[in-house]
Image 1 (cartoon, rainbow, N blue to C red):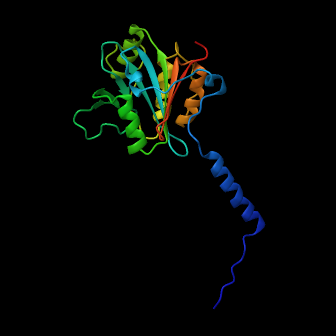
Image 2 (cartoon, one colour):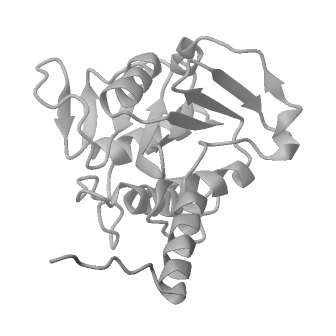
Image 3 (tube, rainbow, N blue to C red):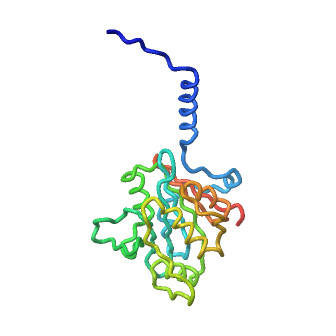
Length: 226
């Protein structure tokens, strides 16, 4: 017995077309610098410049093919190893040289080159954005102590918990920045999606921003406000 194939009714066809358009609109071509930053673009540099032993706060936004995938924080100090907070992240799992404590990599933290390679190849991300604020030695030590739980907790305050539930890495980073990095930036809300936090951070006057793409391009921008 033959069954007649009915064409989509106009309303259903229209809804399907709308869904396809919205799906395309939700896709991302990766992080892009705002227009006012373009004139401050530097020549492509080696990723090692972001590991220099100069005090700094770095916020990492990882980007997938469609949306943001992960958010992390690094604190660089002059004479101390890098403190890398990888909330609910997977870097270093089952690697003996990497020691994690409550989602903080306290030993064996990857260089930016190693981490970017791991995100682009292992996690199949399309880009990683790094937003950096220069700090004093004292300020960097303060933030590092909070993340490693080595700092004293003031009476009446709660210790900041770095152990994070999966999918909530961005909100956890927003809480940390809002509570402890108010001298460097303002965080008006707790974003769920990493790319939304990344879009906001351009307006918070980082000293420089690095964009690392899966096609090998490295873009480095100096803040137009500096």
